[in-house]
Amino acid sequence: MLLDACCGAGLTVTLEPWLHAALGDRRAKCETQIGEDVDMLAVLGGDGTLLRAMPYAVRAGIPLFGVNLGRVGFLSEVDAGLGGHADASEWAYALERAMHALAAGDCITESRLMLSVSVPDQPERLALNDAVIARDAAGGVLALDAYLGDTLIDHYVADGLVASTPTGSTAYSLSAGGPIVAPDLACMILSPICPHSLHARPTVFSADGELRIHLRDIPGADAALLTTDGQAPAMLARGTDVWVRRAREEARFIRLRERSFFTLLRTKLSEWSM
Image (cartoon, rainbow, N blue to C red):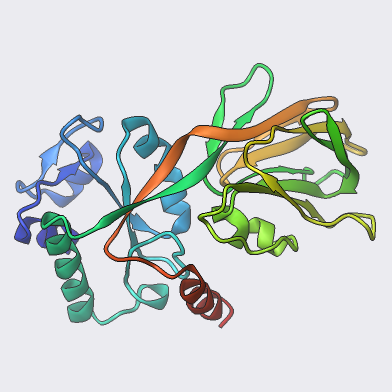
């Protein structure tokens, strides 16, 4: 359906080999990598799919266009309806209108702050939503120290810590009791997960600061887990430092119109809780 809409609007479509073979449609080109002639990466799925696609788009220097097939879809631009159950004709019409708008250049680009997450002897990770240090399922609580530059933020005994962007403030950080932050603010949020202290609360600070999280102890386990945007976890040994900084790169999304964050928030969170 999306391929039909793209071709109908005069857009050239490039597919990965596996998808090209599965569709068997000669209207689409087949490429193994994102080429210089690609202007946009269209992603079909939920927010998790968009997060997985984000590093490829950032490395290629192109924006993302999200087509939501999931339930919530905070980051998507075109929505198939709650749970992907919209009427087929309405869904096709929405795609056709969106592709014609893109072909006419009737759209804007929205930039979002990203995090650079560094661990000694491991490749740098980029995160649009968050970096999470958490205990293994078999382990106990973690003892962590968080620093902003050389200044101690706090000592934590908790199930973990979530370092989040404003974009990620409506994800895991929110579930951990963190605040909702408008995505146009340049800040980071540090939220403890199930802290064993009454005074441990989420903290918001400038994105220009440098956050260091020291994994002081892992009672009952040999390692903790680091995940960025919910992707494949890395093992962290006792005594490891995790550095979280504002990334040089920014995530970019194609929008068909100006979006009210708070209207979107009310709509999406109401749908998600039903």
